[in-house]
Image (cartoon, rainbow, N blue to C red; front, side, top):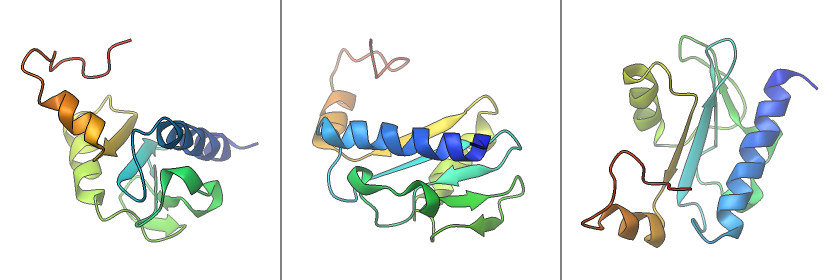
Length: 117
């Protein structure tokens, strides 16, 4: 299995886990990960985390050119901005679930750690 294929599988497994735990529903989330060559694997637009297909993830090269897969999430500018401003970022998970929105609004939430262990 190539490293891209392993990353594709891992992204889809993580997305399915988030879906199964009720942290996202329908097509209310998107996920991306940086590849070893500096490119990106990105969930396609309008897809459900519960049914992502590793072979259909959008694949970008290190210059941001779409190399294959389905049309990427419409949230691509958000993902790109995060990767561009934080060089150490290896992945981005963007959700609109009720749980994550409510958690982000808690007055005593630790803004440096919204996903405590």
